[in-house]
Length: 446
Image 1 (cartoon, rainbow, N blue to C red):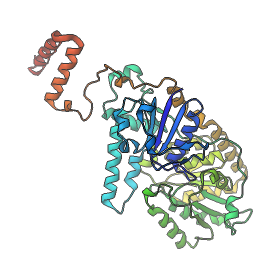
Image 2 (cartoon, rainbow, N blue to C red; image 1 turned 45 degrees about the vertical axis):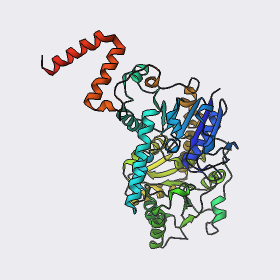
Image 3 (tube, rainbow, N blue to C red; image 1 turned 30 degrees about the vertical axis):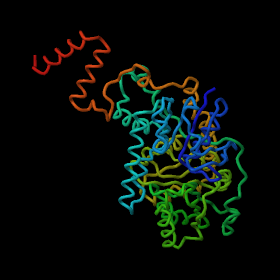
C-alpha cells in the first residue's frame, strides 16, 4: 500500500468541473488499494463521489507520502513537490495550455499571462515528472513533443522502455457505472416541455473553445420536421470562480433571441448542475448534442460531456474532428458532421429524431461503450504503475542523460565541461584525453 498525495487546483464540492471529477474518481479508484490524501487548492470539503474528506493545501507535505499525483497549476503553487525526491505522476489529461489560447480574448494582457503561465507550468512538469498520464493517442504524441524538448526522450528512458509507455501512457476519463437514474428532471424544470417533446441536451459548460451557436443555428432545420423539439443548455457559471464568465454563453443566448427561439424552443439552465444530479438531466434527454470549431484544441480534446452521454445511454449528435467523437461514431453511439455547418448538424439531428429504431440502437451502443470505459478500466495503467512506484529511469541515482533544457550546458563552454565530466566518470582520464583528441581531429577535418 502506497501513501498517495493527489492534488488538484479545482474546487471539489457539490458542483464539479472536469478536473475535479477526475481527481475525485482517481481518489475513489486508488483508495481501494492505497492510502489516498485528496487535496484541493480551493480548500476543504467532501467529495460527492465517495464521501471522502477533501483536504486544503496545508495537507501538502511531500515527506508524508510515497508518491504524488498532480493536476494543472498545483506545482506552480507548491514548488516543494518539484524540489522533492517523491515519485511524481503528472496528470496531463487536459491540454490546458491550448485552452488558454481561447480565454480572455477581450483582455490581451490577461490572455498573454494565462498562456505564459501554462507554458511555464508544463515545462517544469516535463522536466520533473516520473510518470505522465494523458487522454488519447493524439494527446500522447503532442505531449511526447514536450518531453522531447525537455530532454526526457533520452537513452535512459529509451533503454528502460523503447515505447516510452513507462514514461507517458493513455489513461483517459472514465464513465461512472451504476443503475440508470430515473428520468423527468428536465421536463419537471421547464413546464413548457410536454411529455412527448424531443429534448436535445447540451450537457456541459459553455466554454469559449466550443460552438453552441452552431447548435442553436441548427434548430430551424430540426424544427421543420419536429416543431416541438427543445434544446436545453446546462449553462450555469463554472464552479471555479477564478475562470470568469465565458463570452460564448451570452452569444448563444443572443443568437437564440435573434431566431425567436429563446425561452420557447431554446432553454438555458442558469446554474451548474450538482454532480450527483447531472445524470438525471442527461437521462431525460432524447439526444445529446455537442459542437466545436476546427482548431488545435479540438484535435487534442477528450470531451467529458460525451462520457455522461455514455453513462446515461444517450445517443449523440456532434461535430467531429476529435478522438472521442470518432470512437463513439465507430461504436455506433454517435452521428457526426464536420465543424462549421449548422445545416448539416440540423439534418443529422432530424435524421436521428426521425428513426426510433436508430435511436434505440445508438442508446444501446452508448451504454455498452460506457461499461467498457469504466474508471477502473481507464485508470488501469496508473493502478499497475502504483504497484511499484519509482522515479523515471533518467531520474534514478547515478544516471547521466546529457544536457537538459535550461541548463548551462546549452552554452559551448558549459557543454564541453559537462561532457568532460561525463567522460571522466565513465572511463577516467584516459577516456577524456582520447575523446578530446578525437574531437580536435573532427574540427580539423582529419
